[in-house]
Image (tube, rainbow, N blue to C red; front, side, top):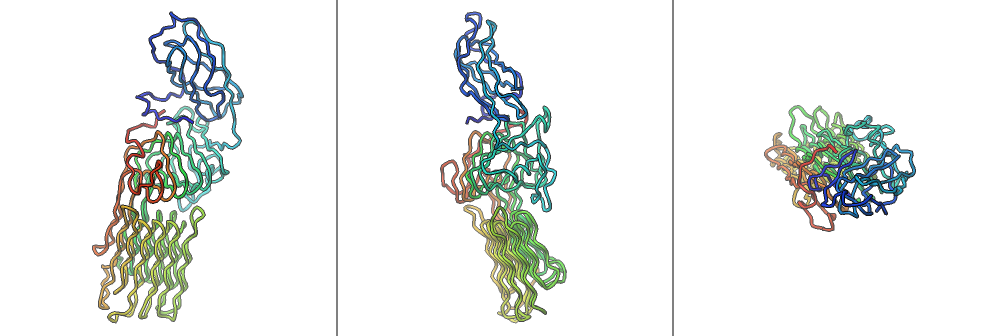
Length: 552
């Protein structure tokens, strides 16, 4: 299948209707009536463009291509020679025709017709609404409504193609789909085809990622994607150890293990932002706080409770602690908080549900012996670790580690302030996630490495049994691949480009923790393959750097 971008065709713009011509030296006055002997493609599918080469004789400057029936639109006509014409034909989704006739006309006459068959594929799912009406709470968890893109992705069968009835959606105007949350993850073979380039615009409202290609063979083609953002969740803060920030990765497309083809697409204004490390909060509880996920923030410890808070997930925030029982992780893989062991054996919080079929976050553990705080649960894929509960013993429960892209949880305070006792470690960040801060004498959680970028490290606990509140900050999250991030899958780019790509790492929670690092190259490969190369790190050549408007 051939693909193109208007900006890549020597300044030619795709046209939604009418016909144009080039100007070869041969004029129709020196030729007889044209003949049309063959079409390069004898059939086309509803809702798509057909790129035709017409073969015949006596083609001349000023020739036009005409299609009778079916409401087929003729694009720019290029007369290559007296025997060859190139043209794009757009077949509307709503046509009821099964065949149409194609002819060529010059001042010397009109050719006999050649027949183009029109095929309606049963595996085509049609988008008819230019809206994202039911994104859900948290944003991105909703089912959508019949006719919108969210619903089409969520309900597609393996091997389907999603197309857009732009006439019903927007009439003659460009169709802008303003997202109210990230679109559902793609977990099977699927094609999303915008049809005539520039007619369908996916807008992330400067707040949301557009596509998550988790598994399967995925094709994204003829789409204009703009104002997209991958924002890592901040680490939780409070009176206990603070959580690390989550990573910001892949605002246009996050490629997990899928085989993705990006063809004839353009990405305008994409950004990746790492989550900030958690900060101390006066008056907060003494339980450890949750690490940020790849979207949701870690739960805070802002009350008088003693238990650990939940880690953030890909979609939702972790729950902040409020009593002696650990809190739940956020939707999309956040780990649960550990129970308090100061006065009771508090129970552990539940891990957040998984994302795209991945395992969810782990449950936090219960406290033991009214002295040892429960451990925070580990984050699932994309989730932050849970904070550990506070305790009264010679050792505390460990904070949860972050999953891929998730920040580590913060450690709960241990009430035993005797020198050398009560040390509790912060949770390590997953790849790209910031480390959580430790409690007194404990070791900080380390930021996760993600190729050439990494999450920041949390702060160590104070030494010698002295609790100094303002030490305990989480590390900031990393940011990379603001347009496309490839984890372990494959990416093939064809005739696609970008303009405006930024990345900003998450800040350190305090001066005793460190910020993450960032790379603003639009495409970043961690452990996958990009255009046949397994090179890890930024791939500057994967997308052309140009400026393009959305108008067809």
